[in-house]
Image (tube, rainbow, N blue to C red; front, top):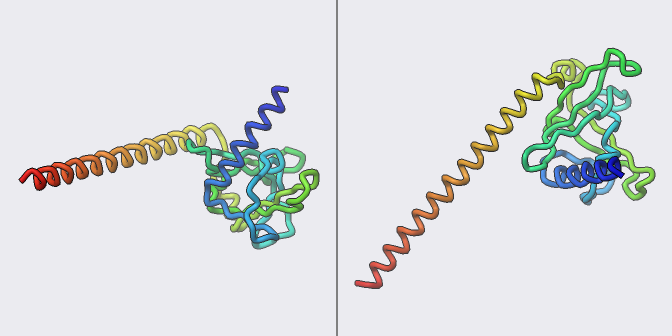
Amino acid sequence: MRHSLHRMTQTAILIGGLSLTGVALAQSETQPQGLYSADELMDADVFLTENPNEDVGDVEDVLLGEDMSVQALVIETGGVLDLGDTHRVIDRDNFTLETQNADDLDDLDYRVTLDMTRDDVAKLPEYDNDWWQDAKGQARQAWKDTKQGAESAWQSTKSATADLLDDASDAISD
């Protein structure tokens, strides 16, 4: 029961995250799919644009931002039977997600394509605790900066509106 609830929560978060981000989605149809399965995305095969038939890894994790949008994928690459593999972080602007068999949940499959070379993949940041702590701090600061900017804009708008209302009131009184 707990596992099922966990999977449903992951799926709901992923659905919202994919719909709110600039993740490039390629489909055989031109219409948006509308829903995406976190369960099916996990372990999706990863390919490179330069060699679209060579499987270079699979999706290990989906990283979400404060607003629950997809920020990055963690891909496992370079190993055989989980020996010698590395986990790399690919941000949302550097991959496309192609849906296959979208009309049948039992046959639903995703294909992730990276617009980079094998050398580029090897240079991606490794997904480890140092990366996690650094990225978390940067994301937190960016969120605070955005929030402060929005509050500042609201205060400026509020002040300008109050001044205009005062001027209008003075003009009517005269």
